[in-house]
Length: 73
Image 1 (cartoon, one colour):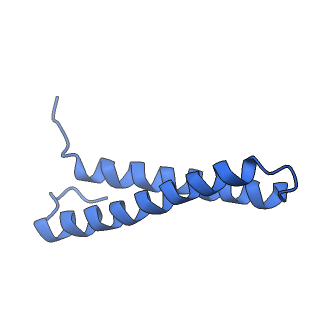
Image 2 (spheres, helix red, strand yellow; image 1 turned 90 degrees about the vertical axis):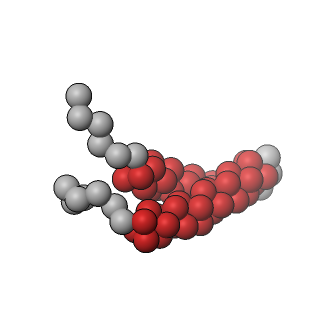
């Protein structure tokens, strides 16, 4: 992270990336929910999907933090 404020172009790029990650996260959430209801589903695959979903959640949080300007207390 830098100490400089983000340019409008950087903000737009972060917002675009954030949107893509949120869609993927939502899609994974739906997929995991459907697969979890199937007892014959490969549990290892399900765990990998959950791990990917958690990774996406962390990335989304980091990007949102970058968009929030630092508040000097």
